[in-house]
Image (tube, rainbow, N blue to C red; front, side, top):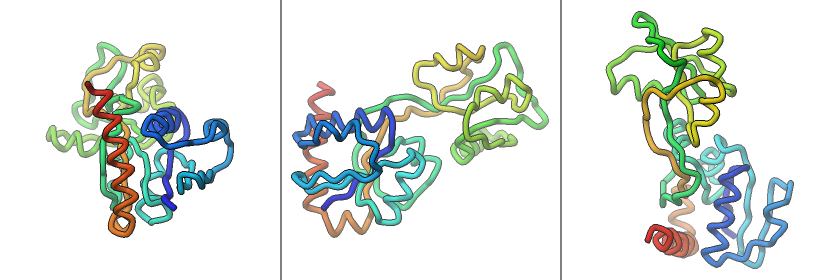
Length: 209
């Protein structure tokens, strides 16, 4: 049985739709279930529902053969997993934002983010030293209350920034969801995984045309 770790929320919905388009018979209750483990015996699959940031951890430790994770998580976590294909779902991007018409503190600029590793790497490539402040949510609040000069966060439509009076300053990297695999599972279940990758790749290619 192939085990697949799936993130809850929008990525889950889009990934489930993609699997169905690829011919996998997922039951209707699959979308509505509150269970954390869902078995689909007719497809010889078992799904784990997890927080997006935890998916790569399950795959790295081998309790899930495969996972669907945003590129933002993979950049931040740097887990020992293989990235198989770009599923082209849940597009967004990582960006620098802040209050409009404000300059950054040149002596000790403070950057608030849920992605400290990715943010640090970005500023290192620019040759800039910054103080990273890790937050777990409501990142937009940081510049509004003077905690940080800028934030590094995911932008989808830009609506959240706008509603909180913030503007985007720099785009860092485009983000989509990727299919990842445990290195051992990749060797041990290569036939089943290869078939899944082939079926998904075909659908993704058709959508791109």
